[in-house]
Amino acid sequence: MSRFSSEFRANATKAEIIRSGQSILEEMGLLFEDRNEDLVIFKEKLRFDPYNPVEVQIRVTEKENGSMIEIKGNNMGLGPYQDTHVKRLIFELMDRMQSKIGSSHDMMDPNIVSELQLLSKLHSTGILTDVEYSRAKQKLLD
Image (cartoon, rainbow, N blue to C red; front, side, top):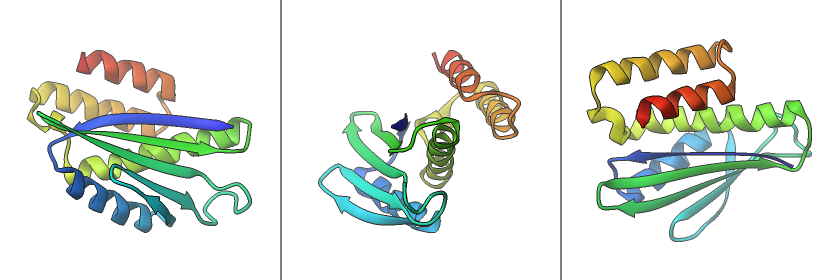
């Protein structure tokens, strides 16, 4: 099974995040499957492999200083193509959500924000691997 997850903090309510997440996932061509109080589940439709869709879960936990958003993706397939597809789907969703609802990093030092934007560009163009990108981003945020 191919799995990948990521999380970020946002200055938005759970309802705003769930609503935004649902509309973004629908724009990305994923179908709504299930929802409870703090979890929304979507499945991919004919985007990569119609017989082995990626399941995407968004879990939102409200905290005192914003909401924590955890995004998980999994696919029953094994191998580098499935791993890469799951990661790209999660990164795309995370990037779209951060631009639509913002993140708590919006109030960061402008130098850190510009460095994060540069890292994101390097990652999206393939210069940085997923691991290198995650490590560099974590180092900046710590």
